[in-house]
Image (spheres, rainbow, N blue to C red):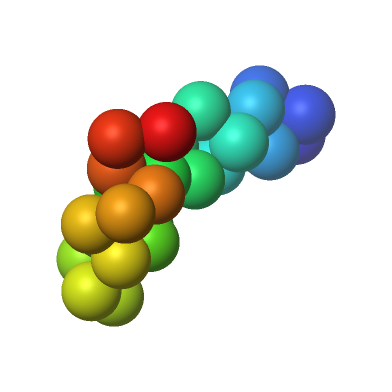
Length: 27
């Protein structure tokens, strides 16, 4: 439901950090 969507929005930077984006981690 909508709860699953909120969880994905709560960890958008964690996903980028795993892809190799340390610059976004500091944001």
